[in-house]
Image 1 (cartoon, rainbow over the protein chains, first blue to last red):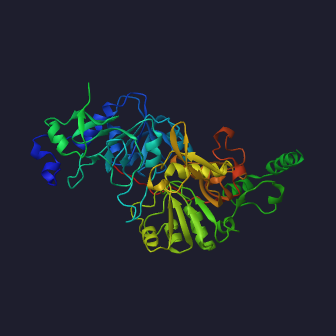
Image 2: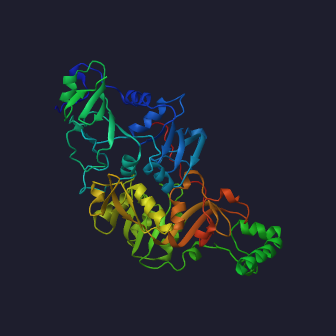
Image 3: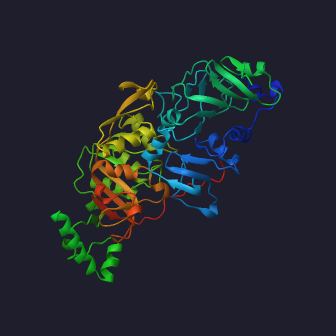
Length: 227
Length: 272
């Protein structure tokens, strides 16, 4: 564990961490054609830029099935927003449902994949992404807890370490949980890691990164996923 | 049924005798004097003040909207004018800035409690101040649980089990039950006194359509209150909405007021 910014960006280890678009592209590569996918706000939304040419249906918690990209100024339709309240387009074949139907779709297991950001992910699949404190400030949860337990699978996309260099993949989460045993895979700027029955299993690493260097940035045991 | 037949006959008379000018007046949302008694069902009211009549202190009030889209801001302004206090509000967000109606309602101090999923929007300063100073109670509810608690109320279901929030801080103190090896929480329906709904089109029966993502919580909220009040951008003739295109049948609706306010503020973001 280290606290220097240079090590957090990987420079000291002599490897090049993936950029956010690269992380999103890496995740998008693993989404099969035909899936219905919910993307959380922030980094997860970038994933939609990397599925072009494939029919992947994007779901937005506020009742959109078949969400397209962000609107351009010349195509403004203020009556269409995504979960982050950004103006978005619909794709051909899209539909609109009300909020209870949208979450019935989620809770009922009709969404193949949800991609969320996180503050912490534990080796048993617990994760924390909704508040850093139950006592300070005003917490807001939105649809994260419903998505985490309802989608068929939950992948997290996040930086491997916090801004001050602390590991975000841990043996146990310290922050208030969003859901228990929910995460099945994590895409970070350093690696792609499955949450297996015995903990974290490394599938892929950023070019030039060693297992030892990755372990040094991780707060739990890692093993290589058997091919 | 006798009542039904009488109603149909009466509508026939009224509809057949409507002149173009009267029809035009109705499209503007102004019931025509001398005609109203011929119409068995007419939920249109001519002013927001009329729409607010009878709302009592201590009411639980549902309000639609996901951010600004589908949010009945003019009805909330009407609620401020009406003056009811000791309110419990139920909606997804707690407003942002200092000028929007929801925020101004909070600032009056007439709201005791807000039940919502995402109070921490950008610039939700008034909510923050009121909550931190202990003047406004918050019940934070996961968004899907919030929607289902409202839907359940409208469907006559008093409570239901959901896996959402099990094992988290938001599940503490709730009844837990295992079904097929998975743990669930008991969540109670939210039945309200008043629902404030924003619709795109409405007819005099209170049949409604919603525009695009303006639908959000509005259809379920319309079902879950003793008094459902709708602000509609467009009032249309009965029959203008195709039966398979009506999102909310008028059976759920009590009052409709014509509020052609235009579009919600765009939230255009060109980079993400």
